[in-house]
Image 1 (cartoon, one colour):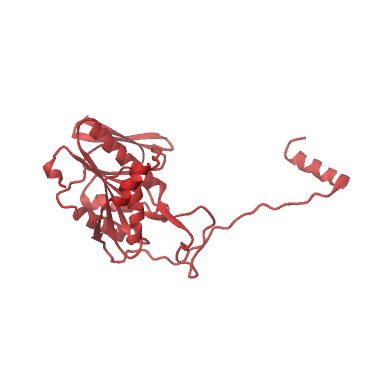
Image 2 (cartoon, rainbow, N blue to C red):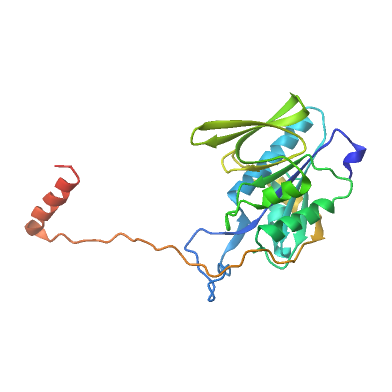
Length: 271
């Protein structure tokens, strides 16, 4: 499949990260260097899930206007990360690429290098748009997308909460991006190709249909070797935040508790 055969085709690449699906108290490994995932499932972070949804919507709009489009989802991680690629395909993505490395616990430098290896391995495909989550749900470094964009010489805007097509921009086809700030809303007009990092709640991700899940189970995934060189960060230790649990104070029993109850109600401004 090559964009050189169809110059009007829009190719979108979405980068996602495999993260633990945490719904209960987090447990750490004995050496306190990682999250204990033995009893946890895995998912993709909320920012990345919204990025997948946004890519699928872009492709649907482009096809609805008479064009062709292709959405590729890429992740860097061990073979088990194929589960997250198949979930993205069940949402409507067309293809999954696994850049295989021994672990998903990489810092932004080797992660960006591995993503670049996946991009460059796509012979004949020129991605018009690269979508990222603003930051991952695990590390929150917010660097990977910026590093990839700089390496490819692409304009990059992060923290996006609204994305619209602009067909008649001064530089040809492009995007209108909006980012919320404490002082208001910033509007960017970006020519394509470009890289964009979105935030959660830019949209409401769709729930995969049974048909989508069946298609994802049969979908062939491309595998690309990743970069195993260490980055510049090293985990020293992890610790859970202190939990401030509410304490129950017995004010008394029977009529003897009445003065204490009145005092508490007075402090609360009730009486």
